[in-house]
Length: 400
Image (cartoon, rainbow, N blue to C red):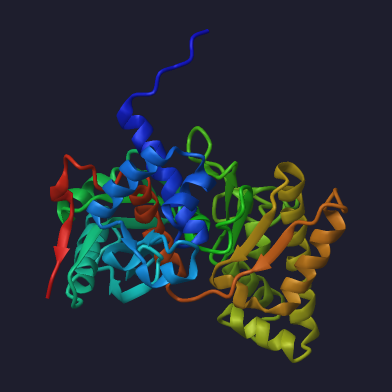
């Protein structure tokens, strides 16, 4: 077989990604060090870094040169020179942030949904964008990302199905692009969060890892070989709907016995109140507080849920052998009683005892979901997709 020829444009795009990935992981480097680490020729380094400097995506760091032999000027990513918007769709509102390329939050807002219809979501997204882009400064807005629950065709921007919203086949991405006049990417919210972790978070050095989120549901995202694995129909990662107990509790999805029916925040609260109606709780934080103060009822409930979750995480590790499992989501406020039971069950059920898997619990922030959605934009920008040179009008100048 003859080797396939790679055209010049494709080769340059691949080299661009190699260079940006290296600088993203390691920080500023001289051109010589970039060539050594990427194995690209000095000529290729000169051409691609010249393009990236002209685009404003790279900047020189002369202040670092004096620390290096022969004083070469290192190059680094211009994180502050570009902006991305990330949005998370909730039941009654949109949470939104404006970030730089390192996903540092520049501004944030919450906008109430006047309607839960697709049109209502688009209208709320427009209001959120207008509020965020009113922030002072002159930078380039490279696009908008939206994370939402459900089965998402990220390539075409379509919500294929969401039992939470009742949507089927909603072209939300194209609707947002038409209304907001910026590049838009939508994805399952857990996939978006995993993308952000891969780019600039704790998983940026991991090739194979999983993100599991707790909250209203239980979601998972898999990154295998450095790439997010969505499955051929976008349905990968539904850990919350794996079987935890045959003919068990009714789940939101309509099936019985799903892990989510035993571990999600609403189900924990509902089950406690069903068992102990004389002392109802309204939030999962209330359960955590009861357990922390030694309430046996809350301790038993949370330990049982933690064991189920830990066993589910071990099954995930046994199937995919990741280097890291990151547990996050607003539901982690459930506290150490559940989380410690989760860790014990995970270790006990994990098949390979000699090869450790890092099980890390994320300290969840209010903007984490929206920052994850901004990661969708940053990912495409690093890959050269968000701003092709023949479409400069896709940039929107932010200027006060």
